[in-house]
Length: 249
Image (cartoon, rainbow, N blue to C red):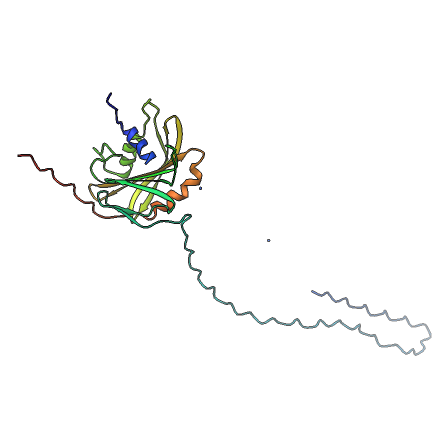
């Protein structure tokens, strides 16, 4: 019986491979009244109450202001240790995979998974680049923007039984100086709900690149930073041209 390889199956196959002091003055005494006949009376001179003298307040000399030294922005180290750079000549990109993950490359596609896993829905990172159609992007007709690439990718991730994949929270990104788009992706594989991140970039008029990082819904939060670190290492170059078939005599 012929096995039907739908776009979803190709993706699933690739899936296998987080705020004054106040002084008081005295009042002088009143003068006594003189009696008749007037007898000279010695009148005491009024005494002026002493006014409290406020000691002068010491003036604090201004403190010299030391100019703040600019602080260099901290360098954010990858959350994981990365391995050596690997190049996909057919895909037109290079990438550093996680050190403790296995990497499998075939044509323009690179698949990364933790070493020793046998789970088809284990954390997976898939990358594909190149010109024209590929194994993940099986239809590139009408693609004029990174969002178009995400839409094509979404179609390919639809399940065989009609359950649709979804892309949400789309946003702008930059990979190797090239503007692109990214989104949260959810899809089903073998009746298991998966969640992840998809990125898409158009390099020039024809060269395109997509990548998907995915894991079981409950596991994705622990894989997201690994995917981000891997994507940060990607650089692009011109892919090798596919050989032109030689007609048979």
